[in-house]
Image 1: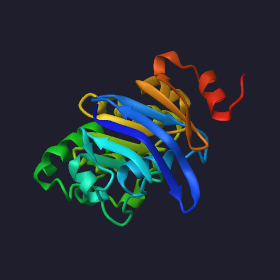
Image 2 (image 1 turned 180 degrees about the horizontal axis):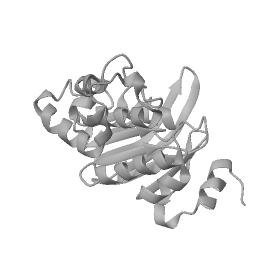
Image 3 (image 1 turned 90 degrees about the vertical axis):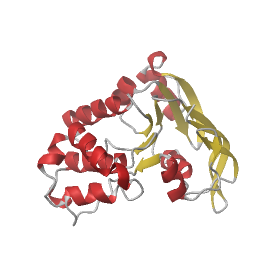
Image 4 (image 1 turned 180 degrees about the vertical axis):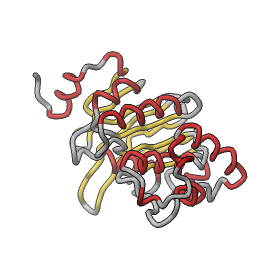
Length: 233
């Protein structure tokens, strides 16, 4: 097991956002967290990343408790986040964005550039262009590529399909499937169809609580919709 989140609670001030959340990710496994807007999905990723503190419970990465580690320390251990909304540097070139992503992993910069350009050949073609000139799909590829420059053991992906055309979504999700051949992935998304095609296990989060957990092959879209809204179809 590479990630073990055990019974964590998270607050924003006095507002209780995540309630007794437990989940796990195994080596080279894709685990998805689905749920409606406001369910707490992004907060969960930010808590694992150390951007938001958890009040209690444990977060373990490769059997090491990381609750009290700062974000850069978690990155150094091998956790990388692709945040919602891409958040690339628009006035830097594609190559400069990728190099910026390797600030803690400079020794492997050349190796990881080769891997990123193999996964996303269009980024190699556009490497000298400003990131702001890329299409939405290309910017998402750049955001994923920048996170990969750290050569993470665990990649956290937050709403990467948002705003992408269906064909681009399929391409991006296909790449994520390839990435799981040698790393673990925890993905938060609302694209149920594409997630079910690549994920090994599914958690559904509603109002800050996990209301469903099962292997993806055992879950239908109807099960997920019911869990989203708390109703039986």
